[in-house]
Image 1 (cartoon, one colour):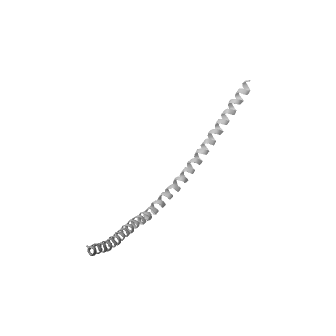
Image 2 (cartoon, rainbow, N blue to C red):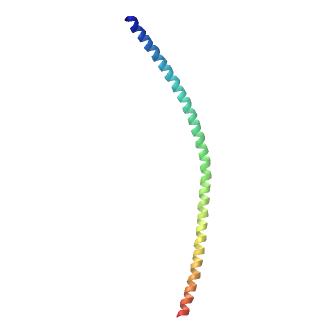
Image 3 (cartoon, rainbow, N blue to C red):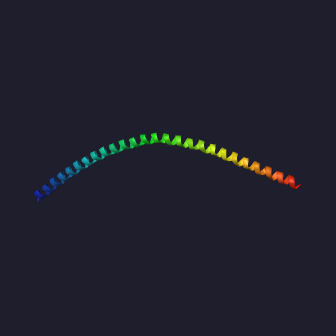
Length: 96
């Protein structure tokens, strides 16, 4: 019995050592993978910051164009209102 107990203890120690070595290797690979992911995320972040500047320019240009078009539409509508209000006043004057 003593031999089997010793052999089981040795077997457990060997398996434990193998498990620790495998876990260490996996952790090292995980750290390398996370470093690569971190580099990729930094690269994507820098590219997004560059693109963000372009989107800001487009947004401000769109805002200016919207303001200009709103002013033009307001002017045209006011001009049309003046024309129709003059016609209505002339028709009222003729009816009196």
